[in-house]
Amino acid sequence: MATEDKNRATAAAILPLVGGAANVSSIAHCMTRLRLGLHDRSLVQDDALKAVPAVMGVVDDDTYQIVLGPGTVARVTPEFEKLVEEGRAATPAAAPAPASGAPLGAEELAAQGAGMKAARKAKNATPFKLFLRKIANIFVPLIPALIGCGIIAGLNGLLVNLEWLPSVTPALAAMASGFMALIAVFVGYNTAKEFGGTPILGGAVAAIIVFPGVANIEAFGQKLSPGQGGVLGALGAAVLAVYVEKWCRRWVPEALDVLVTPTLTVLISGLVTIFGLMYVAGEVSTAIGTFANWLLSNGGAGAGLVLGGFFLPLVMLGLHQALIPIHTTLIEQQGYTVLLPILAMAGAGQVGAAIAVYFRLPRNESIRKTIKSALPAGFLGVGEPLIYGVSLPLGRPFITACVGGAFGGAFVGFFNQLGDAVGSTAIGPSGWALFPLLDGNHGLGATIAIYAGGLVVGYLAGFVATYFFGFSKDLLTEFNVSQEPAVSPATAPEPSTATTSPAPAKAPAGV
Image (tube, rainbow, N blue to C red; front, side, top):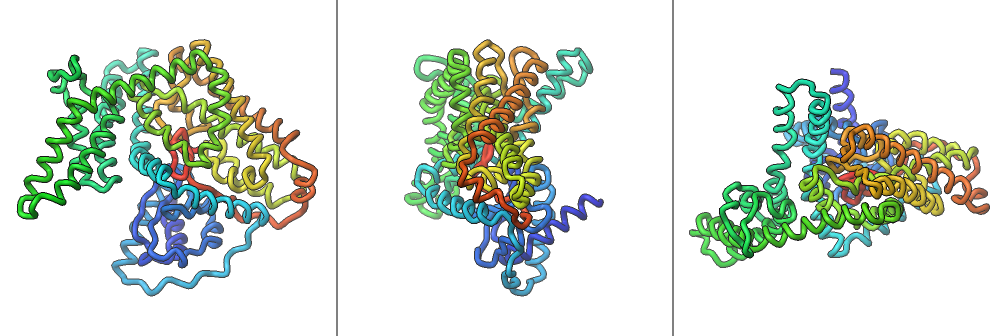
């Protein structure tokens, strides 16, 4: 009950600071953030929100995002929804005027971070990045189920290897595999919803892909297999269904719309899916899996160096969202994605860099307090507070954090090259939060040891690179001075899914 009271108190503290119930148009949450649609952005009190104890920071993107952290956001959101409903029912008075704002520490970094976020938001409004955001919005709602089923799959594998509870393991296998067997349906539903069609029609067309009866159909000179094309086929089929539906809405008379439009949508999209998309998407999916395995088997250390070193810049550009369908495809094919543990090393480099900044700026209590409050989340793979509150505004420490990620990625990639595949059964978490989701081809113990070794290498490389090369004399002179303590760490757009991950939209995984 005390926990429920705490979550409700957090929701109650947030609501008036976003303009009250009347100002909220939509409510959703992802791995770490409460995402709000707002009627009037000017009613939001940013500084006061950052001062709320449970709030790690705020992000003004396509939705207004309040960073609460993994676990907390899933508990606060239902309480927030209840308060909004109660507030609307009671017809509350006009929202209070914005407060003067709580004092902010680390003013130089906060100002630079805010400018970077604003510039980044403007750059993200390109058609390509808006398309990537749509792709991310399709897969992000699936992450909780991927995580839950992934952990159950890991537990089941452990029990099978130990030959414990043989009467229970089949049930666990069913729980772990059921969602993945039907993931194409959920992808189709979310795709149609995101692209402006009727969600259930997108799900209906995508369901064709996993229907066992397609095994009796021949296309391109070969029999189809249930699930062929996977999530990529489902995505393509649902997008096609949206365009067919919109075409029907324009030409079908209103009196016949309820009968003709859904029939033509499923019929036309279904035929194209069966006799085209399933085969093409299946070939693409197979190529993705083959290429990922080839890349790490033949250029493991080098590939890991590049992937781990460039993931943070990809997050900054919003391009990491393109990896979400790839991760999902690999999980669907192999049971785990070999890319996410390598990409997660970017977060390790960021943590090491932040610790080095802490020691290099002993007089700046403001930045040091920001780092201390953000490090626990950083170890768990939520890297936004450290990135936008510390390393990116400082400049060089962001580059040296990438160096740490590169070394950690090279470590994990090297063992992949030796034949020890290290993968994750779900996307979203990274850092220490990824341990329960690890899987590989040489036993859980070896997989955990390699991943843990990569984290240690990333921490150390990020720390060393930042401590010795992360500061110029001018930068030290400017920031190694006494300042007022910071109230809360600055934050940034959602990372990943690796994954986590973290992102203008998240990625499936934070970093």
